[in-house]
Length: 252
Image (cartoon, rainbow, N blue to C red):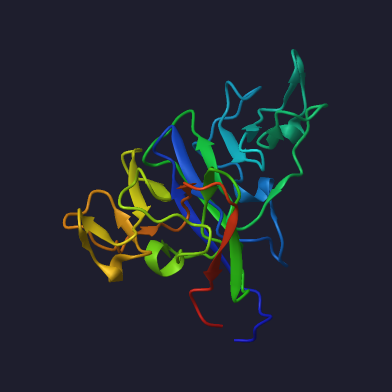
């Protein structure tokens, strides 16, 4: 396949929890950021409303660590005033006048989806074009940062998020960088970046720089991944910013 070929795909996600961390694994057709209106198009099961207190919402972490909040409009502009073209569109709560947002997300962006009516049958499809760059960077610029795979595959922690200068290794999750992945129950599976410590005075050099699931016994490098379509939290122990190089996990 030619390196400049456009490869398109999609991922269907289930919104069976009130709060779900999703990850965008595609870019726009032709490349670049994907408009939010295309990321999560209105579908059966979504709840529209007049504001972010009544509708499904998307919350995207910004560069300051706060959230840009979008709600799925039912067309309401103000009391007694509606716009049918706004119905089923995402609106940025900061925008004045109220309007369908033109904001977009880059592949590899994680975000919260707040579902007013979560259900096991509530499924949404996220389509887009596959990033074909051989590598791309995942910046870690906040102490607590949402992350997602920029490529449309599961992201193995130990094969995909290799130790990088700036990361902090430690003997446990209280002393090292950590990744938290939301599980099917809505809680978190927690992984820390090991410095090779097994127990007091006992180390394993092959474990040094590897991600370890806090639940695993004996202590070992995990084979777990951040699932396709999902986001995760990166908890940076140190103060320095860094970027993790993500290698395209497939050939063209």
